[in-house]
Image (cartoon, rainbow, N blue to C red):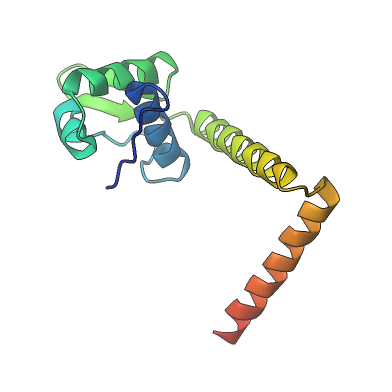
Length: 128
């Protein structure tokens, strides 16, 4: 798993966002056990204390819970996961729209470009 962390914001916050994205994308299923702090810290190439802080934040917001001696698990609240997915999608759309605005495209032009791109993509899919 590739963890792209940079110095633009706190590492623990980037880890939280990374795990949230994986939960929203379905990489982790509701109720699934997470790897240990140490295992994930090695994968992300961060200090275990940093990973622990990220896990504590995920627990605080309710996406992760701890079972004594069994480890940490993804919430079983599918509505919470669905809401997270919607929230992330809205943020991505907002960032995209802001980027398009910086390029000088209005909302209608952007929507038109998206439609054209989707149609072109559909044509490519049909050809395959």
